[in-house]
Image (cartoon, rainbow, N blue to C red; front, side):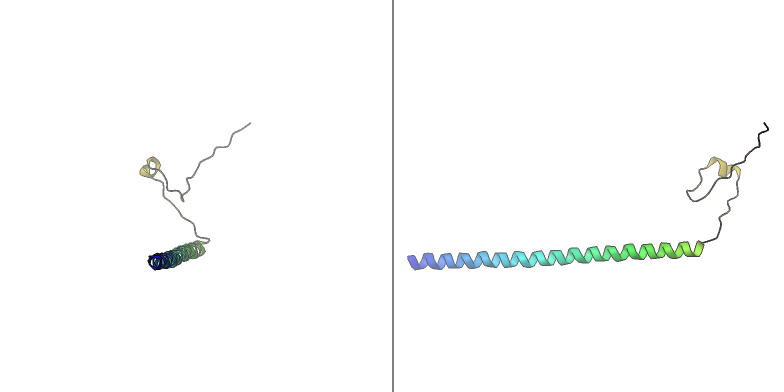
Length: 92
């Protein structure tokens, strides 16, 4: 009877140790997956910044001319287009 309880306790210790090893392995896999996703996002952001830099370098010094029409006055302008303003001189 004592031998059975000793063997049962030994089996229980092996199962607990095996559970800890399994949980540690799964945790390492999850951490590796998270690191790979973070690296992928970092590379995506770096590529996006590089593309924006190249686009700005290509457009440097160029101007955008927008013709004003009656439709253009009623519709809203895009964020990168400027609206012309007429000024009058005031005599004192």
